[in-house]
Length: 534
Image 1 (cartoon, rainbow, N blue to C red):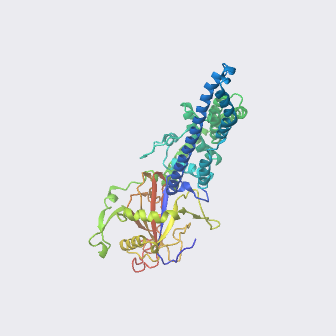
Image 2: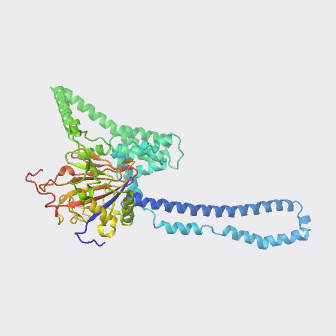
Image 3: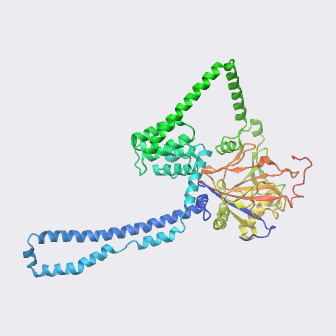
């Protein structure tokens, strides 16, 4: 792919979907925009299949009429064969049927009505998702389950927030998710989904998957998580259904041996502590220390957990005093000529770092034009391998992006000018080439990324927030709006509190476009401060 010169303004458009493959071909699961094409492909195949069924039904109807006619005729003829054939017309028709009509019937039976359907299926198959796409979609569902703290039954019954097209999962679907988790040695999710498959089987759902198979996976995944007693319980249930299951027989003996071993070790440890003087006091002190440590650990929430909490809307709540300092206003950027009579609507989203949202800054027509330009170019987003430095896809980064430059269409140029007029920052040095860097403040030839402008080009039914884990801020998508923040202090030092991440879309799809604005050209537009953190 060839890229244009650096001085041309460019912005990146991203599509994030609720299902996020590792496929090097199309990566269908990462983009609802491309998965919609698969729906039309499937619709075309269904039409072709119905045509084939109608042709087969017509063929069978002709055969049935022929069989019924001959059944009645032969029943009458065989009652008085000589009398029947004594009529010359009957004798002629018998010769004709056996010499000609049965041959025609044979041709009808052997005729192939599958040509049209098979031909269409062969053509369309080259556009089908791969095994990697299916695996990627499954893993995306597991990530959504973790991020939004959903139980398997909620997902299986389709009871997700705001869904229009409710879809339930079958036993086979749950079993497939469990198997994919199992293949990754992810025994936690294996247990969740095999247990859900078993639950649905116990409730009477018909399936080609039997309980013995599900129980085999379930007991092993529980054992791998160290819960031998529960693993034994499910293994015994398996043997009730299939007493000759060899692996289960061996597992029961092994589990019972391990439980006995654990029990003996626990008893020995208990007896040893009772014999030691002051053992009870020491134990109590140790317990107190553990409690203190656990409290301290809880106060230091890991970043991943902070991220997931923010995605669920469980972030830090501002104090009333801080909230009282957030305002909405009409903004004209120091009496800019374009906005004197029609200022833009600006509202504060967060105070530290300062994040603002601009409302109604991109029209529906402009959004559709941007989508139209971007869809053919959407490619899987990449990251830089920290060891090799090579750009590659990652299972946790599942957006697709395309780059649009100002010279390609007047709409893009107009939007670029709008960003410049509102922010007051130079766009000629804004980032053009997509750079996936380990450090967001790394030099890229035009200085660091001084600021980020992010358009929300769709509403999202559930999920899809932009979160800032260091400060507990979450900004939710709202179609037609844009959010803006500075990544650098005025001194040029990086403001690491602006580190942000996109939450996965739970229901719906999310279109965003962002503009990374660089330092060069901003010397007189945003003068450097003397204090490092100003």
